[in-house]
Length: 425
Image (cartoon, rainbow, N blue to C red; front, side, top):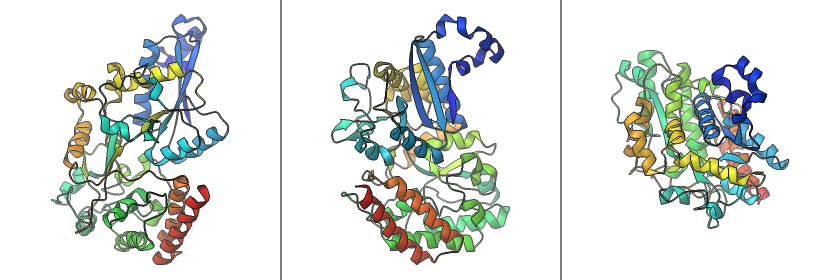
């Protein structure tokens, strides 16, 4: 885990000089401090630390300690800090885990701070609703996004791909994978067998959310088996990355197929397009998750991530001040840009537009293109959803390695998933 402290804040004037002058700098004589914890990647970390810099300059009496870690370890670390009553003042929160952490009593509602330190007067109402639990606002939307399949535009050109990547079907996606592999020697796509987020879209195309309104598993063994068989067929055809790359759980972005050049396509959330492009020299494009012919829409638009105030916050006033700057202060919002998703403040969007990078413009154009091709936001995941996700990856690994039959594994996973959420109630 990477941490940002006073020493890092002085990095711009030289580490040696900073170390020598640290005790005597009145501007850094902070008597208040807060901690901000997020899951990151190199580009997100850079921007967040820059925001911390500008916040500390604007509020010289408050020191911010930034703590960042990859998604794969974030929730384990969060669970440990929650159990130890040592959560950061502000944490990055995902819609999938929001209800679970509210039910644990780990987050504080923000309602009393609205208009009293937290200015939401110019915030889009839709994004606000995604952060509410039982009528109270527990999570502030810091960007919206949707699933996306980023692709290497150079490889698409070299392979002569001319597909409608917004409206394509599973069959057309498979044909593109074959064409790219045969024409360029690069695999068409990563194997997404272990991506439950992709399987959930598959189930929605079959007419079912993964969880129902009572928190039970409503996806079926047939849904899961169909999904795993689809990717098994692509794997057998040799047009997606092999099993050795697939069974690495929650691999960092830098090791994804599109970034390493092992494949032409990977699967991410649309707010991550900027980060993917920052790790590549070839230009990228943005495609939807393939559709099922005659099926429903699998994708949805969701809050890409939230910022939440925890029950362990020591200086709530300073934390709210920091949160408010994140969504309203021009110096901060210009740094954040679209990296965490599309901002919910229209003034911020208008201010950013003239300076969009090509990747940011791609993100906005993609977001606009899919508006009428997505389904409603799924019901909130119940407590235990994180363990269900881990189970999906473990069971799927046995399928990818050829140790379990697809149908047998799918039935076992659905049974396990229901048992997990029953136990977690």
